[in-house]
Length: 188
Image (cartoon, rainbow, N blue to C red):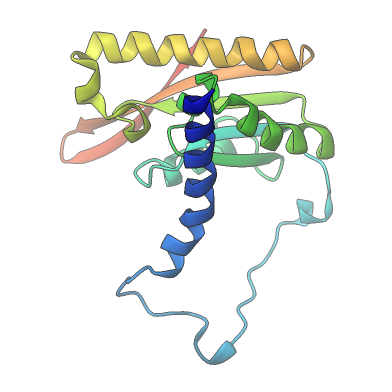
């Protein structure tokens, strides 16, 4: 019980400290809100809706953020019709019994408030939440662990919400010529 309490405390502290880290960002980019200026960004026509069909769960890793949005919007056709939750380690904290309840409490809000009927879970190789690719010892071990955890995540969602459709994807950075590309593999 003592170990569980420490893990939950550590997760709560991480969630509380993450915004503080963002405010201390020492980026060389100009601050767009200097002198209390207001910035307006156009919202899509669908922004007036209060429901959506899908919850997309990804890792916070900056290497995948843009690819994840493009994948959800364009490839999956979800533009203006999904909530997105980004969690350090993506599914690692979901399959961990010590942190599962905390994450499910956040998912429950989206599922109940926005009438979610589909969950898309995206995990990626070389995830820091797992200790990176090196923590697995081999590419095969990494692949087997990540796909097994994705499948366990699906089972956990279906156990709690049997009517949901759950889609799983594993993404990888792949060098193609001079470019790094993000590849998505559907896990059945």
